[in-house]
Image (cartoon, rainbow, N blue to C red):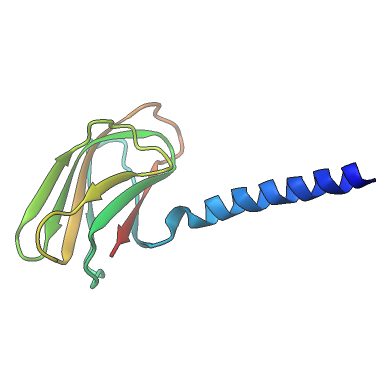
Length: 132
């Protein structure tokens, strides 16, 4: 009987660790925008007009579908832009991060250049998260 309770306790402990890790995945990150990818194009531009906060980093998560993002450009409201080439272009569910350089600036829009791994009937959906 003691073995049963010890195994049950250990299983509950492992499940709580897994849940805590999943819940902490986006702690400190705020969802800024969601964009559905158009397969007829090789780029997408996402307006961030409603964003009034200043962020230090951006994370792109792939919610559905499969695409490779190989370049991103962040346009700021002061006219400056930051372009990044992604060394590992596969955009997976854990996210591709862009660390913003320079002074604190408001984001105007984000442009990404991509291609797709397996063009599926489902559209790819990209989430843009910001960290202050």
